[in-house]
Amino acid sequence: MGNNSKETLLEVKNLSIQFKSEEGLVLAVNKMNFSLKKGEKLGIVGESGSGKSVTSLAIMGLIPNPPGEISSGEILFEGLDITKASDVQMRKIRGNDISMIFQEPMTSLNPILTCGFQIAETLMLHKNMKKRAAKEVSMKLLGSVGIPDPKTNMKSFPHQLSGGMRQRVMISMALACEPKILLADEPTTALDVTIQAQILDLMNQLYNNHNTSIILITHDLGVVSEVCDKVIVMYTGHVVEQAYTEELFKHPYHPYTKGLIKSIPTITKEKHRLEEIKGMVPNPTEKKVGCSFYPRCDKAINICKEQEPGLYEVKENHFVRCWLYK
Image (cartoon, rainbow, N blue to C red; front, side, top):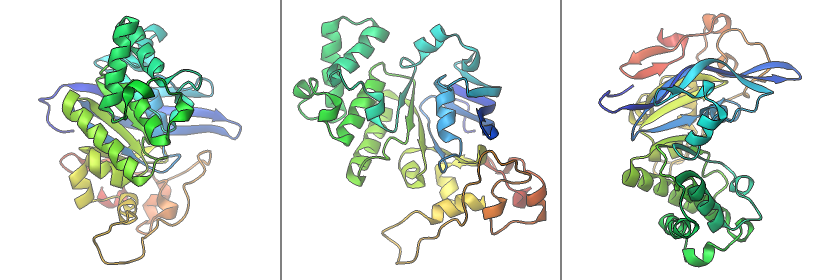
């Protein structure tokens, strides 16, 4: 998608990821395709169980095997297929070229080490910095993500900081090596709205200062509209719609995307009840025939029940997986 003048950093081709469970095989991601160019910001949106977080773990080479495995496809980072990379190659890429911010910093930060040490350790490991230089840079990084009095807070342990502060520490750790791609998995979910806005602002600054490419994974289209140039909407492991952000909000095609957009609260329009998408996300182990959104869709026609639709290009760079647009 988009202009080819920028170089492509990441290309995901026909990616399928499955997990073995007691009830059988679960196809978490089904034949996914997308590319990310240098300096591009991509949002991947969907409810829990849509396959968006699994996609980010696959890019980091962190799919737990067993029970999970990449059953087909390629993930090319600067031409190297990550799915076939050795542990040594992946360790070099992870943290250095591609960094990830997780949803819950408490599970990703080490509780018994100070925040400053954890950032410095990243620098010593990946950038071969001496301890003193690493400390200096860590302090600057903490300052750059808006942590007050970085000198004192370097010595804090994760539990001594608020959720928003921990998330900032996590971001400064992710940025320590000036990665080419920043993967942010629900980076604002556990935070209140004002902190949420600050974290998104921070991600935009990073992009402006370092031209970092960003993949933002979220269930919240409102967040995507603030940060991303391009959007992929996922449902039960499928890409159901893909377009530039502005285009998607102006002309959503897929009934699911329309439902997501209608359920975003606004403060400008007159009062009305927020619409909801009826029904539930289907159980991933159920064998499905036809379109997986069919049971929840008010536009469904007979073929939807019987055959799975392909991904059709409805306009230039705007794709939708729906029989209504074949």
